[in-house]
Image 1 (cartoon, rainbow, N blue to C red):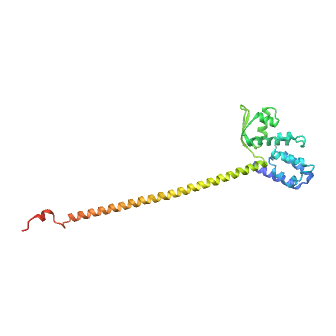
Image 2: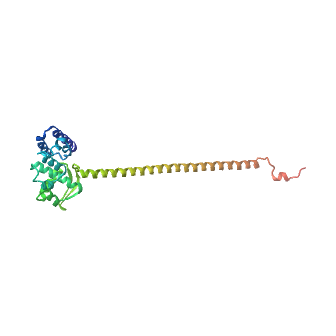
Image 3: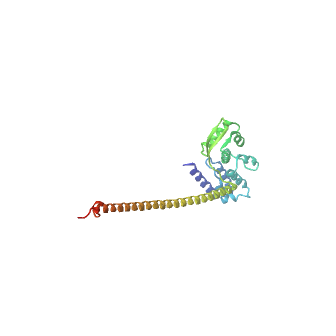
Length: 250
């Protein structure tokens, strides 16, 4: 099973769990989802009515946890650690993986120093082990570790859940792309129309040339016939030659 299909199956499973559980057991569903080693998308779970209805209850902090895993980073957790519940090791690893994905959204070269600071990693060896074992082996990123330049060169990174502001930017980008595509289509159609017109003009010109050549050929043939006709008249004996006409009659 590929990573996309596994992701879809897990999302479907936890969405059903969120629909079927009552308020007091939903925090366990959230912890289980955010701890799962193969799940990296949470917006669909976050949108389940049972989950959104936790807002304003004593369990509302778990909605914040789910929101953090959908859009946040390890640094965001550290800033709000006092009001959020403690995380189990699987959640910590998952949030750090998601943080790498967030950094890779806007940068294809990730400096080691920045990653170590953001992920609370103390040395390069520990960071490279995390990138290899927890990120590349899991299939969420592909890239090259450059020890000389002390950076991670990202070749591929899985997408995270879209934040509201990202959705607006994506809509604008798609609208711009659609407009550009429409303009390009019109331009292509105009060029096709021009090419068709040019082709018809060339065909007409070619026919005119052929017609003129045919007319010239017929005219030339007629002149040849006229010349041959005159030659036959003068050489056919129908007209007396000069000596015969000038000889005196006896």
